[in-house]
Image (cartoon, rainbow, N blue to C red):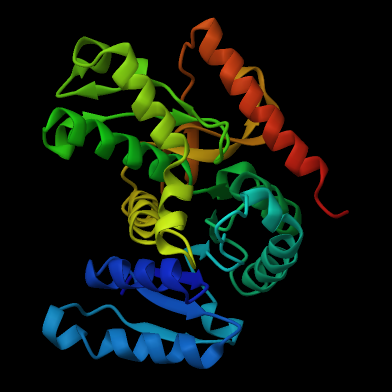
Length: 308
């Protein structure tokens, strides 16, 4: 295969992402996990499906980062998952240690790679990865907005009983309770959502979007969502490797855009072979800007709490 992707973490998100990438013949995949045998076994299991499904990408797994050398994109899913009653913020210290160690190993073997963070608390883990890698903002960002927007898009499609393919939406801000679903920019076949649903129904969808992650956690009891997160990450990886120039909401380091500096915040960006190639600035209403700034303040609290 022309491309190579490393996925750190062979749990539900990482393994499902590896499967999606391989089955699409998007890239060869290396799965790395502290449980090396688990990663090896899952990789072998997937390869034994290749003759049936019909893909030619190669999936390998283990615990040795040397196998990741020359990766075009590295996705970090490793970390503790939320349990019922646990906020993303509770994960901060332990996952900081995990992400820092992963990044140091990845950049040692793939100094020109692009890093995509999936580990929670997402926005803070992006900052951990930036510090550990020293990469410019174009090459380290997080998967959050694609997932949050996908949830919102499904809720809209289900409410209106229309095809999900007709629904577009953006969610801005941090990946948590303060995220900002911007329903004014949501459309169904190009029709603005406020023309199709009442303000009350839109607000209900906004609120369900904000709690979409914990809703899944509460159903699962142990563990968190992985089908939608892996699909969302796949879309980002494909946009990069195929140089699609696709506009997707991602957690990126802002440098004055939206009036914010030095924080990873979810905003629409253009993804291509260079990674994050452009931040797309939307003209927000005063109340939307205020909500975004409130969300950014929550991210700032997490970043300020990071271990030195």
